[in-house]
Image 1 (cartoon, rainbow, N blue to C red):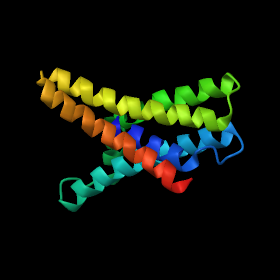
Image 2: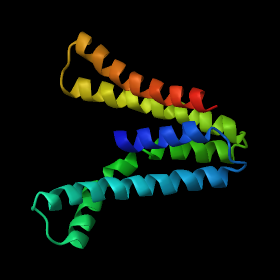
Image 3: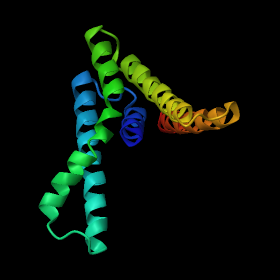
Image 4: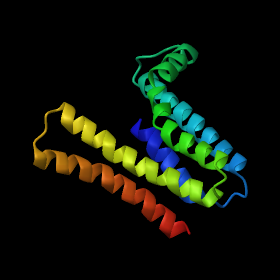
Amino acid sequence: MVYGAIIVGALLATESGVHETYTATVAAMIVATLLSWLAHSYAAVLGRRLEGGETVAGLALLRALVAERVLLRGTYVPLLILLVAWAAGLSESTGVTIAIWSVIVSLVIFELIAGLRMHSTLRELLVDVTVGLTMGIGILVLKVVLH
Protein backbone atom coordinates (compact mmCIF):
# COMPACT_ATOMS: atom_id res chain seq x y z
CA MET A 1 0.00 0.00 0.00
CA VAL A 2 2.85 2.34 0.80
CA TYR A 3 4.36 1.94 -2.67
CA GLY A 4 1.02 2.69 -4.29
CA ALA A 5 0.47 5.77 -2.15
CA ILE A 6 3.97 7.12 -2.74
CA ILE A 7 3.83 6.49 -6.49
CA VAL A 8 0.50 8.29 -6.80
CA GLY A 9 1.63 11.09 -4.51
CA ALA A 10 4.78 11.63 -6.56
CA LEU A 11 2.81 11.55 -9.79
CA LEU A 12 0.30 14.08 -8.48
CA ALA A 13 3.12 16.28 -7.20
CA THR A 14 4.67 16.34 -10.65
CA GLU A 15 1.29 16.87 -12.31
CA SER A 16 -0.01 19.52 -9.89
CA GLY A 17 -2.78 20.50 -12.24
CA VAL A 18 -0.68 20.86 -15.39
CA HIS A 19 -3.25 18.95 -17.40
CA GLU A 20 -6.28 20.91 -18.39
CA THR A 21 -8.72 18.16 -17.51
CA TYR A 22 -9.44 15.79 -14.70
CA THR A 23 -9.76 13.08 -17.35
CA ALA A 24 -6.09 13.38 -18.28
CA THR A 25 -4.97 13.47 -14.65
CA VAL A 26 -7.08 10.46 -13.64
CA ALA A 27 -5.94 8.54 -16.73
CA ALA A 28 -2.28 9.31 -15.95
CA MET A 29 -2.82 8.21 -12.36
CA ILE A 30 -4.40 4.90 -13.41
CA VAL A 31 -1.74 4.15 -16.04
CA ALA A 32 1.10 4.97 -13.62
CA THR A 33 -0.48 2.81 -10.92
CA LEU A 34 -0.96 -0.17 -13.22
CA LEU A 35 2.53 0.19 -14.65
CA SER A 36 4.04 0.38 -11.16
CA TRP A 37 2.07 -2.71 -10.07
CA LEU A 38 3.28 -4.60 -13.13
CA ALA A 39 6.89 -3.40 -12.67
CA HIS A 40 6.92 -4.30 -8.98
CA SER A 41 5.52 -7.78 -9.71
CA TYR A 42 7.83 -8.30 -12.68
CA ALA A 43 10.90 -7.28 -10.65
CA ALA A 44 10.02 -9.83 -7.95
CA VAL A 45 9.63 -12.61 -10.53
CA LEU A 46 12.76 -11.68 -12.45
CA GLY A 47 14.75 -11.63 -9.21
CA ARG A 48 13.60 -15.14 -8.36
CA ARG A 49 14.28 -16.32 -11.91
CA LEU A 50 17.80 -14.91 -11.82
CA GLU A 51 18.38 -16.77 -8.56
CA GLY A 52 17.17 -19.95 -10.25
CA GLY A 53 13.95 -20.33 -8.28
CA GLU A 54 11.39 -19.71 -11.06
CA THR A 55 11.22 -21.26 -14.51
CA VAL A 56 7.86 -20.33 -16.06
CA ALA A 57 7.77 -16.54 -16.29
CA GLY A 58 4.12 -16.18 -17.36
CA LEU A 59 2.59 -18.14 -14.50
CA ALA A 60 5.03 -16.70 -12.01
CA LEU A 61 4.13 -13.18 -13.13
CA LEU A 62 0.43 -13.90 -12.75
CA ARG A 63 1.01 -15.22 -9.22
CA ALA A 64 3.11 -12.15 -8.41
CA LEU A 65 0.42 -9.80 -9.73
CA VAL A 66 -2.12 -11.46 -7.46
CA ALA A 67 0.26 -11.37 -4.49
CA GLU A 68 1.24 -7.73 -5.07
CA ARG A 69 -2.29 -6.39 -5.66
CA VAL A 70 -2.12 -4.73 -2.26
CA LEU A 71 -0.03 -2.03 -3.99
CA LEU A 72 -3.25 -0.89 -5.66
CA ARG A 73 -4.94 -0.23 -2.31
CA GLY A 74 -2.60 2.64 -1.58
CA THR A 75 -4.04 4.50 -4.56
CA TYR A 76 -7.72 4.20 -3.64
CA VAL A 77 -7.99 7.20 -1.29
CA PRO A 78 -6.26 9.79 -3.51
CA LEU A 79 -8.11 8.50 -6.58
CA LEU A 80 -11.45 8.68 -4.77
CA ILE A 81 -10.67 12.17 -3.52
CA LEU A 82 -9.73 13.28 -7.02
CA LEU A 83 -12.99 11.89 -8.41
CA VAL A 84 -15.06 13.54 -5.66
CA ALA A 85 -13.31 16.88 -6.24
CA TRP A 86 -14.05 16.53 -9.95
CA ALA A 87 -17.71 15.72 -9.28
CA ALA A 88 -17.95 18.65 -6.84
CA GLY A 89 -16.72 21.04 -9.53
CA LEU A 90 -13.47 21.98 -7.81
CA SER A 91 -10.62 23.14 -9.99
CA GLU A 92 -8.24 20.40 -11.05
CA SER A 93 -5.40 22.10 -9.20
CA THR A 94 -7.42 22.09 -5.98
CA GLY A 95 -8.41 18.45 -6.44
CA VAL A 96 -4.80 17.44 -7.02
CA THR A 97 -3.65 19.36 -3.95
CA ILE A 98 -6.28 17.68 -1.75
CA ALA A 99 -5.32 14.27 -3.18
CA ILE A 100 -1.64 14.93 -2.42
CA TRP A 101 -2.49 15.80 1.17
CA SER A 102 -4.56 12.62 1.42
CA VAL A 103 -1.45 10.64 0.47
CA ILE A 104 0.59 12.38 3.16
CA VAL A 105 -2.08 11.74 5.79
CA SER A 106 -2.34 8.10 4.63
CA LEU A 107 1.40 7.57 5.07
CA VAL A 108 1.27 8.95 8.60
CA ILE A 109 -1.78 6.80 9.40
CA PHE A 110 -0.08 3.67 8.00
CA GLU A 111 2.87 4.30 10.32
CA LEU A 112 0.62 5.00 13.28
CA ILE A 113 -1.38 1.80 12.72
CA ALA A 114 1.82 -0.24 12.38
CA GLY A 115 3.18 1.23 15.59
CA LEU A 116 -0.04 0.64 17.50
CA ARG A 117 -0.21 -2.97 16.29
CA MET A 118 3.30 -3.49 17.60
CA HIS A 119 2.32 -1.94 20.96
CA SER A 120 5.03 0.68 20.49
CA THR A 121 5.93 3.12 23.21
CA LEU A 122 5.05 6.79 22.74
CA ARG A 123 8.62 7.48 21.66
CA GLU A 124 8.53 4.67 19.10
CA LEU A 125 5.16 5.94 17.80
CA LEU A 126 6.66 9.40 17.35
CA VAL A 127 9.52 7.90 15.34
CA ASP A 128 7.06 5.88 13.24
CA VAL A 129 4.90 8.91 12.53
CA THR A 130 7.99 10.98 11.73
CA VAL A 131 9.02 8.41 9.11
CA GLY A 132 5.60 8.63 7.41
CA LEU A 133 5.64 12.41 7.64
CA THR A 134 9.14 12.51 6.15
CA MET A 135 7.94 10.53 3.13
CA GLY A 136 5.03 12.95 2.79
CA ILE A 137 7.32 15.95 3.03
CA GLY A 138 9.39 14.39 0.25
CA ILE A 139 6.30 14.45 -1.96
CA LEU A 140 5.71 18.13 -1.10
CA VAL A 141 9.35 18.94 -1.84
CA LEU A 142 8.93 17.31 -5.24
CA LYS A 143 5.90 19.50 -5.90
CA VAL A 144 7.71 22.67 -4.82
CA VAL A 145 10.86 21.89 -6.82
CA LEU A 146 8.92 21.18 -10.02
CA HIS A 147 6.48 24.07 -9.78
